[in-house]
Amino acid sequence: MKNYIQLKRWTPTLVWIVGLLVIWEICSWFLLQVLQVPLAQSKLPYIHELMYTMLEYGSTLFSEGWVTFTNAAIGFALGAVVGSLLAILMSLSKWVEQLTFPYAVGSQMIPILGLAPIVYGIVHDDQLSRIIIAAYITFFPVALNVLRGLRCADPAAVELMHSYAAKPWSVYLKLRFPAALPGLFSGLKIAAPLAVTGAILVELMGATKGLGVIMLRNLYYGPSHNYMFWLTVIAGALLGIFSYLLITIIERIVSPWQPEFRSTGGDE
Amino acid sequence: MTITREYLPEIEFEHVSMRYQTDAAEVLALEDVSVHIQKGEFVSLLGPSGCGKTTLLRIMADLIQPTSGEVKIAGETAREARLAQKYGIVFQSPVLYDWRKVKQNISLPLEMMSMNKTEKEKRIHNLLELVGLEKFKDKYPWQLSGGMQQRVAIARALAMEPEILLMDEPFSALDEFSRERLNEELLSIWSKFGNTVVFVTHSISEAIFLSDRVFVLSPHPGRLSAIVEIDLPRPRTKEIRNSPEFYQLISDIRSSFEGV
Ligand SMILES: Nc1ncnc2c1ncn2[C@@H]1O[C@H](COP(=O)(O)OP(=O)(O)O)[C@@H](O)[C@H]1O
Ligand SMILES: [Mg+2]
Image (tube, rainbow over all chains, first blue to last red; front, side, top):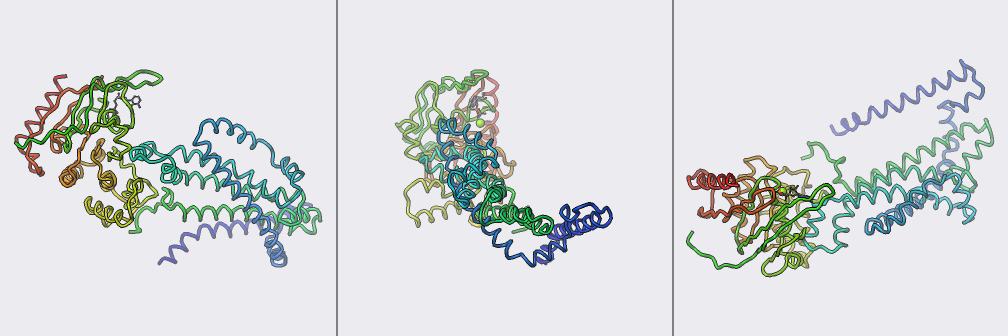
């Protein structure tokens, strides 16, 4: 029964994916054989060719993707910690908020494409610059959302703490932090795919390992490496989706009490 | 009841006024209110909405400070009483913490005191039993009905064994049936604890059923317009609601409203 329900739940997704692949394959054939567009395969390659290349070079993709992922993850974690600490400081003092908030906003106006070579120029280490860029991308949405979470704790709940003569740190520990968890996770969910994209971007500018490196290399090699190029793009996208899902799973474990996770009856 | 209790002042308001200052206007929420509430007394603040009941309660609890006048809680200031953790408060909405299960919500105030684990657990167990929620101790608040949530809030307010229990329209969101049942439960809980209770309501019959004395407030500005002694015998059961004395008190209080 349970398996059946599971199957039923996943059927639409499965149909959707298979359908998309079939349409892709047909369009690809149409471009190549019917319209005879020049360089048709670099515009929309055959799925079966991609799969064939995948079988051959899957391990390379995986190992390079892993490098990108770990660097992005370290930077992401760093950015999340910095963003949360900043949010806590801002929530503690209006003064800190007024002082730092304009800079935090301003920092997000600088294009990553321009920032990445500057950071690389300063640290001269491709791994470190990937981490810094991922952290840089992460801290802002995290700080913003955590700050809102810390601030939006129910005023009556704050008064309740006040009536117990609770110490300020108790109010944070027992009320404001848990109340900010949903905000933290929305910030993390926005930032996770961006951190991956940011890390790939830095790799494009010159690194020794990573998805961005093989992406660029296969682009340079031209049409002969077209399938591999497409695979690196797809792998980048999947990595972004994977990091998003990972955060979603962690969120469910850490704060299962959130309204969106409440089952609507039937679990008694 | 002919037993005269020794008069031990617990809550004393002398000429308390409260003026709210907002951008648009100035509201005189309370004007020259003097009340004296005895230790162990069950008192209701009754009046239409906007007459300053919540304001009065919040001043008692030291959640806000009056514009003028003096407040004494067992001889101390309201602030000293709050810092000594003498208050248990039940708000109009349960204000339970979503991330805590029922038993963890009840233990919240105990975490602000130094209390060893076994004693804490024993007290939580007793409280759960008192409000009849043992079976629900591992549920999250959203898994309970409104009445159950408010019972959790009452258990939480009693957890510190507060000298003073302040309740702001705790049952006003509930249906008539649950409200009457909870009124009876509240009285039986109070008879065990014997603390001073200040209960805010806009229901005349609820105020009469529960209280030793009813303080009637009138609006614009909020003033104390009458104090009605409720000399119905205790323990009170639901039959008392049908007694002629009960009806007499209802009409007495109604007429005190019409006087203003
Ligand atoms: N924080 C506030 N700021 C401004 N006006 C307020 C505030 N709280 C209450 N008031 C006003 O004071 C009056 C009394 O309010 P309240 O004490 O909440 O009455 P009640 O609890 O009897 O309904 C009302 O007119 C209300 O609008
Ligand atoms: Mg009110």
